[in-house]
Structures are given as C-alpha cells and as structure tokens.
Length: 278
Length: 293
Image (cartoon, rainbow over the protein chains, first blue to last red):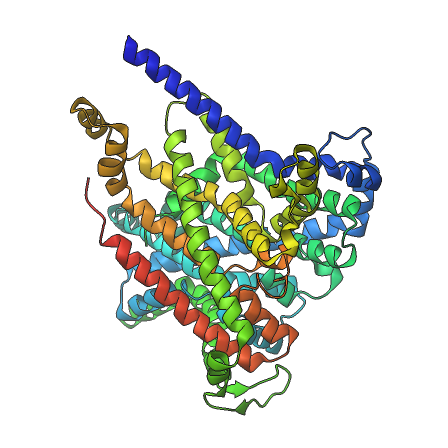
C-alpha cells in the first residue's frame, strides 16, 4: 500500500512539473500571438498583457504586404512537387540498388551515403554558377531540381534500408506469374514501401518547407518568393514595425503548425523511423 | 541473351538514372568545382578564375580574424548547445515515458518548436528578447530580463543557445523516447527487485542500453549546430560586432556579400573537412560504447 501511494504521489509531482515546463515552452507562442493583435502603442507599453482590444486589421495589412497567398502557393508547389518526385525517383533507385548489387551500383550507393556529410554551405557557391549556367535561376522548376539533388542521398539511404527487409520471394512469384520488372516494382514493391514513404515525405517536408538559404539563392523575383524568403524580405523593409511583423510571423508559421497538429502521429513515427542509426 | 542484356541496361537507367542525374548536377559537380575554385581568385562573375594556389588557405589560416572569431563561436556554441539540448531532450523523454495522463499533449508541445523553420523562429525570438523580456523584467524586477539581450556579445551568445535548445530538444526527445520504450521491462523490474535505486537503474541499465540513440542524437545535434545559419541570420545577423557569426554565415558573407567566391569556396572546403572529421569521430566514439540488451 505504502509504495503504491508514494508512487502515485511521485507520478503526480512529475506530471505537475512537466506541465509547468511545457507552459514555459509555450511562452514565446503566447507573446507572438497576443502582440500580433495589439495596436502599436499597446504593444510597446505592455507586451506581456492580454490585449484590451483586438486589432485584427494588423493581419489584413500583413497579409497584403507580404503577398501572403502568393508565398503560400509557391511554398506549397515547391514542397509538394519536390516530395512527389523525390519519393518516386529515390525509391526506384534504392530498389534497383538493393536487388541488383552490381559493383557499379555499390559504388554509387556509397557515394550517395558519403554525400550526406557534405554541408550545404560547402557546395552552395559553385551551385549558384551551375544553376545559372543551366538557366534554372528564378524558376520554381529549377528549385525543385535542386531539392531532388539534395534530397536524394538521405531518401535513397532510408529506402535502401527498408527494401533490404522486404522478402524477395513475393517478387519472384509475381515474375513467374508474368509480371514485368516495372510491374513488380509499381504493383508489388511500391505499395509495400508505404510506411517508409510516409517517413521520407515527412522529413523532406519539414526541411523543404522551412528552408531559407537555397530558395534565397535561386529565386530572386518577388513573385516567386516562398514563405521564408517573403518573411525575410518583409523584415528587411519593416524592421521594428512589430504590429505588422508579428501577424506576418503568425501567418508564416500557421500552415506548418496546422500540418503538424493534423499529421502529428505520423510525424512522430516518421522521426523515430528516420533516426535508424547510419 | 542480347535482349535480356539490353533490357537490364534500360532498367538500370530508368530506375537509377534520374536520381543519379540530379545528384551529379546538384552535388557532385558543384563539389568538385568548389575544390577547383578554392585555389583561385574568383569573383563569381568572371568566366576565367585566376589560379592562386594555396593563397586562400594561407589567408584563412593566418590573416582572417573574422573567420577565426566565427570558428571559435561555432565551437563554443556546439559544445554548449549539443550537451544542453541532449540533456534536456533526454530528461523530457525520461519523464514522458512514465505513465502521465498528459504525456501525449506534452510530447506535442515539446516537439512543436521544431516544425517551424529556424528563420521564422529567429524573428519570433528577436521580439521576445527585445520586447518580451523587457516586459517581464519590468513586472518582476529581475535583472536577468533587463539585460540588453541581443545588444551584448555575451548575452547574444546565450540568446542563440536558448533558442537552439528550445528548438531542438523536442526532436531529440522523440528519438530518446523511442529508444527508452525499447528497454526491456523485465530487466528494469528485476533490477528493482534486487533493490537497485532509481539512479542506479538509470546509470547502469538504461543509459548503456540507449547508447545507439545517443549516437544518433549527438550526430544530429552536432551537425545542426555546426551548420547553423538561419537562426544567426534572423536573430542577430551575426552581431554585435560579428560575435555571433557562425562559420556557415561567414562563408555566405564572404561569397555573396564581399563577392570573394574563391575565398568562400576555400572556407567551405575547410568547413566540409572539419564537419566530416568531427561527426565521424563522434559516431565512432559512441558506437564503440554500444552494448547488446
């Protein structure tokens, strides 16, 4: 009896402490939201207080100055298209490399794995030259191609590990039944890879959606801006105008927060699965 | 026979070709070009880059104070940020694997900062440091909050550390949770029956069994903090007086602000070698401590 009572008390204390820590974690979000609906004067005099009057017009102004719908659309297109193509090409490559481990494929796979250590900053300077030589500057398509190149190593690595665990017998049976090699991949293997696809898509989405540096190098036109570049450009122009800047930030983080809350279960699982030791 | 061979050849191209093509264009060619440019005095515009041999490397190692400052900042930041984020991440995971009623909500909250990109996080925190802390300082009178957080070299450093920990601890927590739930229950119960204290169980059973997660988490945290760019850019722009300029930001400024692409690529090459060395050394070190359950 005694021990179970103490145990419960201990759990209860832990719970209380953790809730307090969580509230502390949320303080920045509180400040961000509360001040995004204050007038500039209120915001300056007391930024910790709950707003006396809600100035929603801040949002309307931020919405039009950042050209939010445009930036949201660009971010969506880049993220979705890159993800779809990346999953397709890297699952195909990983599958072939596992099932046909020729010397050529083994070397290639080691190259992909080795490239994962290269920091972006180590290739970005000549990359700008390559991208402009290929006439891919200022194009969403060009940016997507960059993401295909940078995303391939990690995605192939994850799919490679997954395909190794898929029994080859099913594929052999399908071949005996008259399935072409492409049929085997798209009808048998592709559906089996679904759990790993979710992982790859989630990891790539969090990265591509939030990326600032690469799009800032490739896209210079205002109408092509993604959310991070639009936010950065906005801050360059409206420094210290917090009544505009904060709503712009709320708008900027809202899509990814909604995505996270909706996909939470898969995101957590994806990160656990993606952290397989390399 | 010949038909089978050409079919194999076609399959190889269709399956592996696209990835390889993009990989070569976007990573391999720029990487090799970068090695070449690091020995030149290239300004990014001219088609012909003037070969200068080891001059760039000589300059970086002996005359470049800003690079040295940036490098020293990155080292200090990595050591403190990596240790603190991992300790906090582990503690959160340790307590959130206990049977708490609110554990799912709490996990969500701790992970949330991580889904927002570093650039936006930096701007949010800029407001917290400039206005939020001032407001808290006024009402509580704690001098801690009344410092000019981003205007001072020491507090700006700690400011970035705080944001980094806030951002990454939740991610590391997720990995530690998945590892902690894999620790066999019967082992923990046996130890409890044998009369081991909580600290003993933690130190002698749990920690050795979750070393694989430690390997991953250290690797991730080290590479994040080494490559830090977005946070510095949006939070302090590297200031005050370049004291919070990371190596990544220094490389960027050298190339795209000062237009010294050759020098920038030389720095990038040094940066690559250091990142590769440090991370492979760390993985090797922690891997040697892994045990089987």
